[in-house]
Image: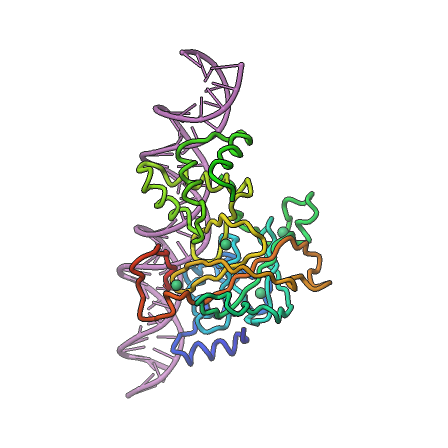
Length: 157
Length: 157
DNA sequence: TGTTCTTCAACAATCATTGTAGATACGGAG
DNA sequence: CTCCGTATCTACAATGATTGTTGAAGAACA
Ligand SMILES: [Mn+2]
Ligand SMILES: [Mn+2]
Ligand SMILES: [Zn+2]
Ligand SMILES: [Zn+2]
């Protein structure tokens, strides 16, 4: 993701208007490695701008995704996650307890579909999701994290 | 996934009761390679049992997943998909236009997290999702499939 | 057959996300 | 710097998938 200043320029040059709300979203995403959900971004932005609506956050995230500045991820935690790291060569570790997402920077060069196995499917991209337990959740005695964002966890019926 | 008869036995032996509704779900899932959503399963079962409720289908799918007889997948199509193929060594091709999911049976032996890259994360499993266009959707002139299930497609705002 | 516990169907509720409408404000033209 | 057209803002309603609830019906077992 480009810097907030560059994003400001990019938004203007693509016919989008730049507002304080949007710039605040730019700043919050800058350097964020937690793969926040829209609601998490909203919470972070709300600390600075009391009245910003969740809809505005969604809209800005969509614009950024459309411009290729962020990537939207669905890793099965119930909410779409947004990633300012658009590097194709990184994949994700997802905690199956708390839903936190961490980057795994590793190239898997052999990740091509074997000849003939596509059976007419035109493959464009590949994503790998590793599932397991994050450091915090490994100590099973820590069911609640005292700090850090809380993930909405899909509960059993 | 085991056969309907074996599943009947398994349900009884695990203290679950066997009903006509559940057996109908067993039968419908048997040999299904389309990775149906709960609603798709409901539609298929409804052909045989008019009055079965969607909740009952969800409940049965959850039971089957709990017993390890099916796997629930979240591949970003907006609905959880269910897979009677529980083979760990297969991955998925997802059509980004119609949302159809196809199996890709191929082992990726080098799919281990490089030493030290986990940084405290305890990795349990890895899934690969290949995205692209299915044969039907490749011919862009075929925006509507005349036969086959329709996927609820997430629309842009 | 009767008892007990599960499961059923119908219905309401939830959660993330999207749609709508009128008010607001960006930003290029003058 | 001001004005105007249009994109964006906020508040609110609506959607769609999934989950919770409840009284009635059904399965297992003695
Ligand atoms: Mn990432
Ligand atoms: Mn499969
Ligand atoms: Zn965790
Ligand atoms: Zn398709």
